[in-house]
Picture 1 (cartoon, rainbow, N blue to C red):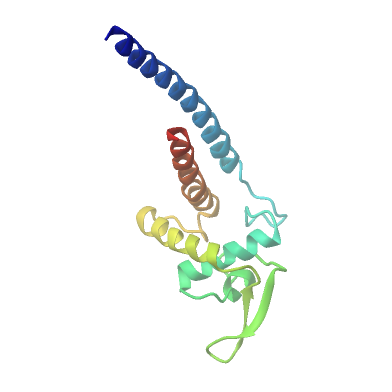
Picture 2: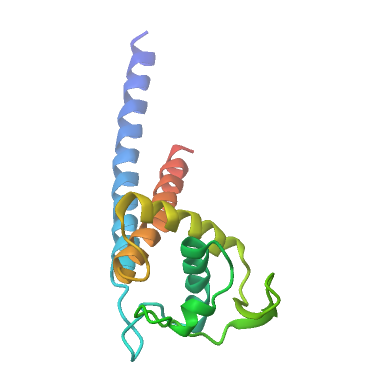
Length: 161
């Protein structure tokens, strides 16, 4: 009877030790990813956008267009409609819109920007931040929510296996 009790205690101690190691690894990973997101900065010569490439600007322009205007047309965003935002991109296509006029659209698949547009609307409503006026803060917050939270959940679930 003591043998079983000793084995159970040993298993509990080993499990606790493993979880402390997992917790350190998870914490280091989250600090690394979070730190990388927080280093996002202004990268264009005009100083108006923190997005690093035409690919980024195309996707984020779609997020702004969907989140602010409810449509995929990125004309206003890439043209800089007097609101201090100018995210022109080469990753765009031109098609006729529902109004019969030519409009620019991102050439990137729409699933990710559509998902992030819903997140952007939630951030806008809950914090008052928006991508036009608070570009860096809003982008960092959205990236933390969209990348760091699922990563933490995934690592925790992986440790449970």
